[in-house]
Amino acid sequence: MTQIDEISELQEAPSDIEARLLPIVEELLYECGYHGLNIREIAKRIGMGPATIYKYFGSKEGLALRVLQEQDIRLACAITRRIPNNGSAEEKWRAFYRAMLGYYDKNIRTAVIQNVAMPASTWFLSEEKWPVSAVANILKEFIREGRASGELDPAVSDNQIMAIHYMHLVREVRLWQSRAMSWQLSDRLERFFPIVWKTISAPPSAVKPRTVK
Image (cartoon, rainbow, N blue to C red):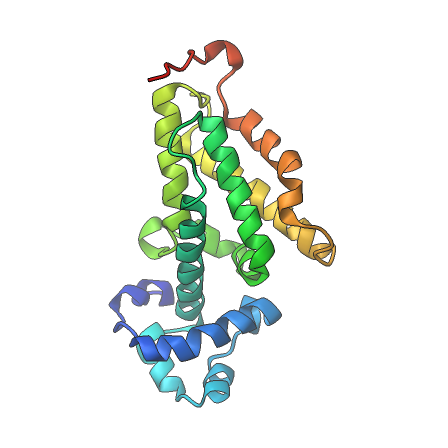
């Protein structure tokens, strides 16, 4: 059994312990990356025994995934508030990226931890072992709607659409971080989004006119 497998078998951490622990883990992930995490150092910084951390999180993988999960939930809430109820698939996807990049501009730790700090191997964990699903579920709903309306290219599979999203997003954030964050991510929307949309959308001749109700 791997450390990731063990996460689902751990006791749920009390809220007061998470409140003390997760901000420190988030800070260290941002400053040092995943490989810089050390449970003994974390425990020392907050005055908590390492055994307590292992009891609730199992490993540094468990700690990192818990931070990612919290970030993902907050990001999904911010995005959802900015998605129009009506409109074309293109309008909804554009609003999604506008909200996401704007959120990253205001929450740079989230941008870096989600797209830079974690090892690439975590991106390929199965859904059962990957508790970070809130933003992905928004995209899955967009895909479902886009399939129903015929606005997404049927030749591009759902998994390919998800891969295209992450590939372009991670590249954009990593480029920004490597250039000392010298621009606003939201200012890159019109360079970033048209490439994604052109890749996943149906050819113009295949899109049926939308009926206005």
